[in-house]
Length: 117
Length: 110
Image 1 (cartoon, chains in turn cyan, red):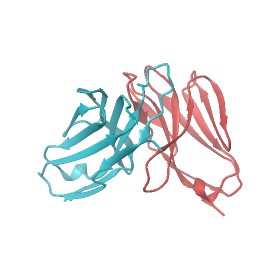
Image 2 (cartoon, each protein chain N blue to C red):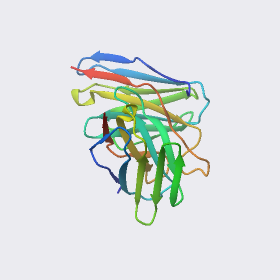
Image 3 (spheres, rainbow over the protein chains, first blue to last red):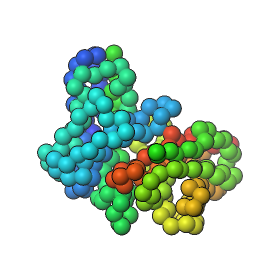
Image 4 (tube, rainbow over the protein chains, first blue to last red):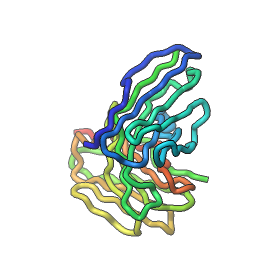
């Protein structure tokens, strides 16, 4: 299994509080991704990173920010959590980008279940 | 825009064959992926097609037609443990990440 961990695995917080989720990898992969998964919506991309300090928005980036100061860590921050951000959050990594000529399998972390009350 | 469609649910019996279809509309196509996700777990990679045709891997096969924007995942000799969600994914417009369909929940009964 790819070395990806997420912390915390479960969190309950209140509306308006800041929350940071951490994704840590030991594979030295260049690309890292944050997704959220909700019933009826499937996996939706929030933000992704293609290198240290290089990040870009996905399809549902509003209300989220990310940072990547080291290859192995990718942080997702909810500046002021809302109930609509209650979800399961998955981190994923891949060695190359999708447009690379190399095969690009994404490996997923175990997920973080976040509940915003 | 980006759009990936697949059936929401399917049922089948042990030992049978099931085909899960996926249609996609994306720009900058760079391959079609299938992932399996058991309830409460992370998605895991099953297959990847970039060229037209059939890719076989044990009991699982995946087919792609780029001209039709169509793929299917074929599962043979179904087992109870194949009960899971199957996610179809293709490249986003920028070619930098994957866009996932909503997933097909397959229930295998004895």
